[in-house]
Amino acid sequence: MNNHVVTLKSINKQYVLGSDNISVLKNISLSIKKGEFVAIIGPSGSGKSTLMHIIGLLDRPTSGKVILEDEDVSLLSEKELAKLRNQYIGFVFQSFNLLPRTSAIDNVILPLIYSKVPKSQWHQKALKMLNLVGLSDRIHHKPSQMSGGQQQRVAIARALVNNPKIILADEPTGNLDSKSGNEIMDYFNKLNKEGNTIVLVTHEKDIAMQAKRIIEVKDGEIIRDTKTR
Amino acid sequence: MKEIIILSFKSIWRNKVRSALTMIGIIIGVSAVIILISVGQGIQNYITGRFESLGANTVNVLPGKVTLDEGFTGSGPNFAGSKLTLKMAEDLQKIGGPINLVGAEADFSATVSYKGESKYTSIAGINVGYAKILNLEIEEGREISQTDIEASRKVAVIGKSIQEKLFGQSSAVGKQINIASEKFEVIGILSKIGSTGIGIDINNFVAIPITSAGKISGSDKIQVISIQAKSKDEIDETIELAKKYLRTKLKDDEFSILDQSSLLGTITQILGVLTLALGGIAAISIVVGGVGIMNIMLVSVTERTKEIGLRKAVGAKPSDILTQFLIEATTLSISGGILGILLGWSGSLALNQFFPTFVTVWSVALAFGVSAAIGIIFGVAPAIKASRLDPINALRYE
Image (cartoon, rainbow over all chains, first blue to last red; front, side):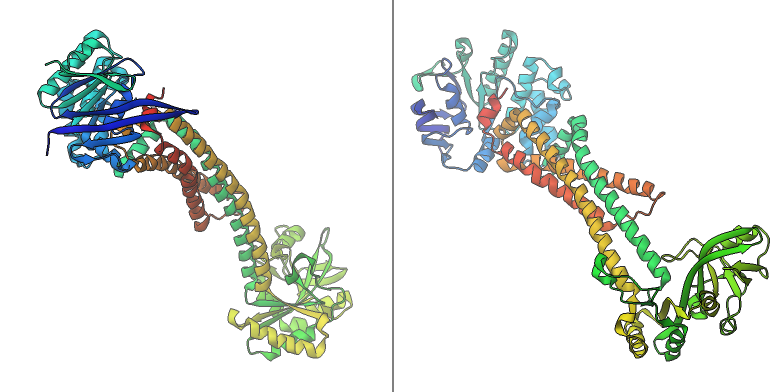
């Protein structure tokens, strides 16, 4: 077994828009190793979000292979992909995407509902994650009762609760003020130091600079792949 | 699975007002079905009960050709041209065997009076057998005896209402009353009872020996011969014997033998169809309620597009989403169904104060089954829509 978490091989993604075929990703190959902290950066429309969706098994490439650890997942069914997302991937979104009118702890429990983790462990696991993001005193708060930064921390706890192989964050600081944004980035740094693999999509240079590896995407192609540290 | 059920309940609870409003359609539909069927069934039971109190083991011989079993187009009895006689009743009684009692009745209407008070009512000339078949109970005095009949005595047994009308609180037994200008001695008073039997109001009953009735009307013809079989099982045999005997005296179109149970069967059948029709009309409103559920579920899917996308992203399979929304729809319809059953049940209990209603188990089961089925049928389309949402688009949805 190699230490690659995700490997993409010659990924192409095209959309049919009317009579036109629009190429969003062109022949992309890359692999992400265990423990890496990667930032995918690019202007809007560059294809970085589509790339992240393909890595996160939310979208399928038009051609090419997606390999998760050693398994080719390109041809798996909806149902099997859902299972893999549940076990391997933790998502953090720009707009937090917490369930409204649902307490922080229940939001964190959400991925566990669809997992094989026995119910008796749910509460304890969720509590541990909320503790990790410093929200153990707010477990019964609803999203509407929390600040943006706190909501994003709940979302991070949710992404972590199933102990994923990779954390995918799509513009996680996009909806936050810079102080809260920095706080969130500190959590990502901390998580990475603890051995978590993190892939971050952003269009902000300073945010990307905090990652160890920066992949620049433009017009559906990787134009630069650099290690910062 | 259990978790998904809890999820569905939570989501219904979160939208309490909307859920309640959605359920109203089903509640009204189900309660209407139960109430209407209970009314139909109540009337059916009432009529059946009345018939049975007359005696399910009794058959009536009527004059003329009676074809009730052909429904509304059949012809009724020919009382005016009756060729039945008391002698026939007596002969039938002598046959015995499965025949227990033979009653004979000759009816006419006349004024009954005592001093200043009078009442126009129907007078029944009866024999001993008929009094027994009707189960007449004497409260005071005695009943009409065989001797009264043989001697054509001018004696009468009167119902409680007649007594009260003519005599008020004073005793009537032994007094002379006028029936169609003839003097009759009151020999007995019938016990007051709630009316039993179709067309016979015991409280307004005036019974005289059938032979005396013949003298007043100037005809020895009688209108009805009632034959009571020893048991319900011997009815067919009784009918055969009666038919065989009557054919020796009468032409086939001069008499008819009417089996209570076949008449009852026809009435029950008509009422059954009526009940079903009523229930069917009410069931339409359950379907309308189902459309209401579908509507609100579709709204709910659109509203929760983002939630569905998120659930899929964190690992919900399409089938998990499908189940969640299907359970929501079914829970709405089943809860509506249960509330409707409670409402319908109490409604028909309340109606029972005014006329007979009877809640049948099958109508409750049917209403419950239909409401559950409606939830599934109308919940499927929104649930499939939800399960097929693309997670990426769903997450982007604002």
